[in-house]
Image (cartoon, rainbow over all chains, first blue to last red; front, side, top):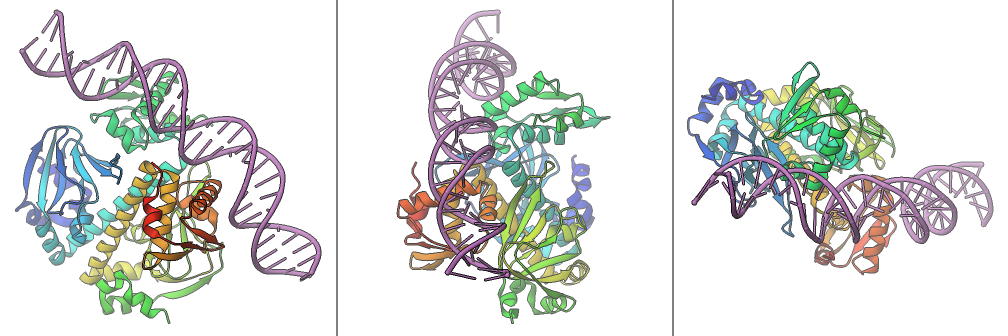
Length: 222
Length: 222
DNA sequence: CAGCCGTCTTGATTCAAATCAAGTCGCGGT
DNA sequence: ACCGCGACTTGATTTGAATCAAGACGGCTG
C-alpha cells in the first residue's frame, strides 16, 4: 500500500523502522469524503494523523465564529503532534479538503514510543522544528507580502518541476486555498486572473500550468 | 543570580537539573544594549539563546528588504531551537529590543545533550510544541482579527493580574510592537488612543494601566 | 440531456489600514 | 537648562483587499 510513502517521509526516515512498526501496529486507516470534519477544535487529542492521500485543512475558528485555514497538509504529512505531546485539546479543527485517506495513530502509542525510543523523539523534534519554520514563514508572508506575491509563492511551492516549467494541482476548494493564504476567494480569483493576463500561468480547471516558475516568483509589479 | 528564573522555566522543569547543569556549563552570558543585533538571518546557528533579562525580537526580512517582528521573547524564554536542531541557518535575525542579558548556549552542547538525555529531548519537544501553537495563534490573529482586537489581546497577555485590573509594561519600542502585531506604528498609536478614549486603558509612558482586563478583551465593537 | 445546486468568477462599492507628511514629545548630552 | 534627535503621535489622503451582489460555469442526478 502506501507503506512506502510513509517510510520515505522525512519523519520516519529519522524515526527508523522500529519506531515506525511500533506506531503502525495500533493504528488504522480511515477513508473520508471531501468536507468531512475529522475532529473539532477543543476536543481531546486522541490521535495523531498521517495523511495517506488527499489534503487535510487545519481550520481555526475565532470567538466570533469566523473560520480560516491555518495550514493544508498533503500526502505523507504527519500533523497534530503538539496537542498530543502537550496533552492539550486541539486548537483547531480539521476537515477533509478532498477525499482523503488518513492513518490514525493513537496518541497513547505515540507518547509511549517517544519516551522509549530516542530516534522517535529525535524525529519528533525535527518535525516540530520544521513545522515551526513553516508557520514563521506564513507569518512573514501575511505581514510583509501583498496578496499577489502570496499566491505566487503558494503556487510555486506546488509546481511539480520540469526544468523551470511545470504545473500545480489544486484539488482543494478555492475557498480553502484563499483562507490558507489569508485572503477572500474573490481576491484569489482576481489575482489568478491577473497573473494569467500577464502570461505567468494558464488556468486549466483544477490544474494550473506555470510556464516559468522563476518569472512567477520574480514578476511582481512594484 | 537568575539561575532560579532558569530553573523555574517550563523548559528546565521538564529537562531536569542534570540537563540544565550540562547545558549551562559551556554557556556564557552576554550583555547587549538596546538595538544590538544578536545574529543575522542566514547565518549559521551556533547558539541557542535564553533570555535572562529584557526583550529580544525575532526580525525577519523579506526579499525586498522590508522587515517585521515575528515574535518577541522575554525573560526566561529559550528560543532558536529549530535552526539548531535542523542545523540550518537562522531564518530571521534577532535584535535586542531593550537592554538585554542573554545566555548563549553552544549549539553543539545542546545537540549532544539531546542525543543522550531523554528528559532534555522531551523538554525540547514540549517547547517546540508550545512555540508552534503560539505561531498558529498569531496566524489566526492576523487572518481573522482586526487591528484593535490584536492590540487588546497582546496587551491583556502582558497585564500583571491583580483581580481583573493591572498594568502592562511595554519596554520595547512601539515600532517593534506594531510590527509584532502586523500593523504600522501609526495604527498602533491610534488604536491605543481610541481605547483610552473608551476608558479601556490609561497610557502612562512605557506602562499601560488596564482597569478591567475582561472588558478590554470583550469590548470590541462588532 | 435538462435542470439544479454548489463553486467559482466578475463587477461595483466600501472600508480598514497603509502611506505620506508634519508636528510634538521626551530624553540624553553638553 | 537648553538643545538636538530619535521616537512617537496626529492629521490628511490613498489604496489594497473586503464586502456586497449578481452571474456563469460545471458537474451530478434524475
